[in-house]
Structure formats: C-alpha cells, structure tokens
Image (cartoon, rainbow, N blue to C red):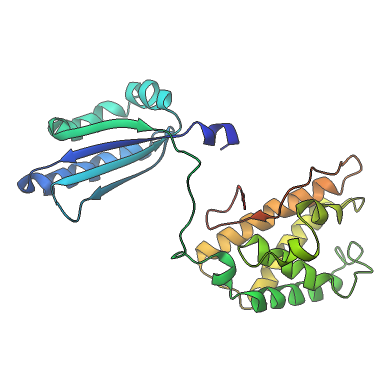
Length: 261
C-alpha cells in the first residue's frame, strides 16, 4: 500500500446494544459474515469487541481503504447482499455507525517489547554482526564488496541495527543518521545477486547468533533486511545522489514501511 493510500484509510465504528438473549446468535451471524467482509479488497482489517462492564454493548471496528471504497465499493459489490443478509436482524440495534479519520496521535505502549528487546538487546546484535561478517569475508561473491573493512565496522553495524529495531540511539549519537549510513554504499555498485547473498547470509547469521526464531520476529527482521538491502543497491549505483538528512528509521513489529522516530 502506498503512502497516499495509507493516508486515505478510514475507520468505521458500528456500536450495537444487543439483548443478552440474542448475543450468541449475534456473534454467530458475524462469524458467518466476517469472511465476506474479509474478501472485500477495500477492507484492511476488522474486529468485533464486547464490553466487559456491560455485555449488551458490542463495537465493530472496520478499517477501510477509504470511505468512498466502503460506500461505493463494498456496498455495491456482489459480497454485500450476503453480508447484509447475515447482519440485517441486528440493524435495529445499532446505536452509532460512523467513519473516523485517524489522527497523528498514535504510538505503541511499553507493554509490547521492541524488536531490539525481543532479540536480546545489544549482545544479540553484536553476536549477529560478528557471525555475519565472518561469513561475508569468506564468501566469494561478497568478499570483494567488503574488502578492507575497518576493524570497528561490525560494531558500527550492530549499533545501527540495534537503533533501527528500537534500541538506544547510539549510532545516531556517535556516527550520524540515515544519510551517513547510506553514504557508505556510494560507488560500490552492488549487484542483485550480491544483495540476495547478503540477505541469505544475515539470516544464517541470525540463526547462528541465537536470535529469536518465532515467525513474528523473523518476519519483521527480514522485512527490514529486504528494505535496507534494496536501498543499498540503489545508493551504490552510478547515478545515485545523496539523500536529504534524515534520522535512523525505526522498525517495528509491523515491518515495512518504517516509522520515523
């Protein structure tokens, strides 16, 4: 999804008051209706929640690609008649049905660990880069790209990755921001086969370094690796121009695109 598409998203809230004796059938109806909702190309996600303090209250949250896509897309699609047939008995119990536009007030709470913390902190990223550069220097395809590395290179990359994944901003404080890292790739003319080898080796290094193997972490980790290595290829090309000064990207559990800290 592009930045423009993300900016146009709206959240529809439908608030129901369902009599206790009808709550089971209401939930069953939405279980049947949900696949029809999910099948719409205009539906980003949805969730039906029930109030803990008053079981009669339910809130359905649906994220749409836009209000127009909901009203003129989903409601006029072949999916809508079957969806409406399931929920029609409960339309009279709706207390609110409106579209809300997200604001810039958003963020993650401290209850959810950062990728940095989940990975194991600074020591984990130090192990990762140590294992990775040992592999790189022995690799026929990548060794020429990294020939003559400074002894502290792996340490700097560990600081970079740690900051990207939500750790201390040490790289920014001691080395610079995103533009500084990008500049390291100027003129290297990294090829696509080299980029793919880089991706494969750092995943092998993650295994060797004992980084978490759960799907959620590895998915986010690989999303950044793919994004970062593709940028490296771009900025290593002969016509690359230095980017504007910007901070180190912050990568969360959702993966790409990065959010700026």
